Amino acid sequence: MITGASSGIGEAAARLFAQQGAAVSVMARREERLRALAEEIEAAGGRVLVTVGDVTAPADVARAVDATLAAYGRVDAAFNNAGWGSVGTPLHETDDADFERVMDVNVRGVWNCLKRQIPVMVAQGAGAIVNTCSTAGSFATGADASYVAAKHAVLGLTRAAAAEYGERGVRVNALMVGSTRTELMEGAMSRVPGLEEAAVARAVQRRLADPAEVARAALWLCGDGASFVTGAAVPVDGGCSAV
Ligand SMILES: NC(=O)c1ccc[n+]([C@@H]2O[C@H](COP(=O)([O-])OP(=O)(O)OC[C@H]3O[C@@H](n4cnc5c(N)ncnc54)[C@H](OP(=O)(O)O)[C@@H]3O)[C@@H](O)[C@H]2O)c1
Image (cartoon, rainbow, N blue to C red; front, side, top):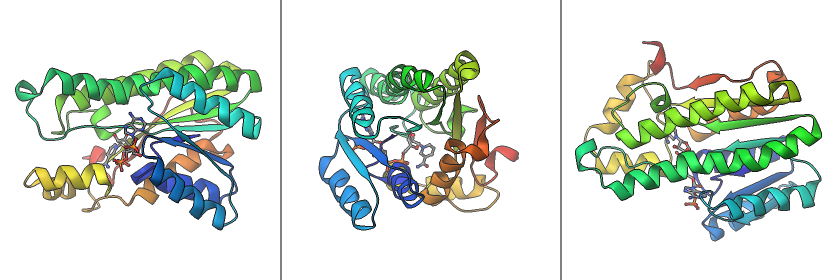
């Protein structure tokens, strides 16, 4: 199950997981984008299920989990990736409504997913969850303060869930993602002068990530190759957290 699969990292992950033989279940709000992706995956011989919904709505998340179970009988892995932030607004100029929206999508969205995915995985006796966090989940990145706070909370939820359900076979990890060339980042770079240059300068690899590079890390964390990895904050950031 992959949330935020209508663009960027989630879309790349849906393609990659399907190529690797996973039956995928994708969720986001933009139906046309999800249907186009599903057509592409099916044309390549993959299995895909589409749920149009909002991760901030518990009923939508429950519908996606239930539909996945009904279609496939299990939820082996979940990539809770939907997120949003409005990079570049100073804290004192941020609307309260924007703060609430950022917390809602990033924190409540992951919360809603964990609440509904974990019981399924506990019943199976196995499961792997990957939450999309950010370098903004470890330190202040110059992104907006609400986004930094929200991604710190996503890391907190990840660690708490890993600690609580490790004995019951459920692994929960966070990807600490650095600047990645997606709609979210392209939008921010077009609004904020110098943002792209600053992002490139922060990464020791001196470039932004391609969404597929983040998707490959998610695939590894969801698979048996990461069987003894849980509660981890895994950097996929071109080395920017190393310096
Ligand atoms: N790009 C970066 O530099 C970067 C760096 C660190 C972390 N991240 C994180 O990576 C994740 C993916 O972002 P991205 O960069 O791939 O951006 P993106 O291309 O804008 O994708 C964001 C995805 O989240 C979905 N989404 C947003 N709000 C949603 C909601 N309320 N309910 C359901 N789906 C929702 C969007 O779909 P709909 O609009 O169709 O709903 C879209 O599929 C986010 O958690 C983001 O915070 C990105």
